[in-house]
Length: 178
Image (cartoon, rainbow, N blue to C red):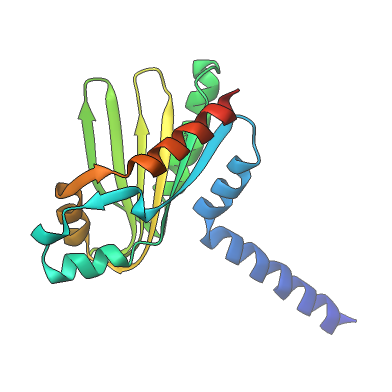
């Protein structure tokens, strides 16, 4: 009987530990089921890069990008409710295993760039943006071993947004908000 009890406790602890490890993914899954949020998954080909101007390593790293998840908190909620949800999300992304890369503030907007991994081998690139009205957006770009310099170089060489994919995303957002 004691053996079964011990195995059960170990099993429960393993489940709890694995859930703790993926706080952000758990948050995203719960948010997609929550009517307060709008969730959009975009393919990486949504953005076109000027690949001719990129070095071979950056081109290779761009191909390692898997997908982009965007989560928006709907605007028509009271400020205090939005603040509470934003703080909850900040607590997740400012804990292990995530590390801050850079913060940008400009004209009432604030964007934090966070990553998981090492600067030379990023597995998740996260951005959390907020405006002066506490509306916020979370972005999660999944990759496999991408160098931070490659992300920076790729962002500098964004050629355009793929219009057909952009139209699909806009239609999804319109449908979700109605």
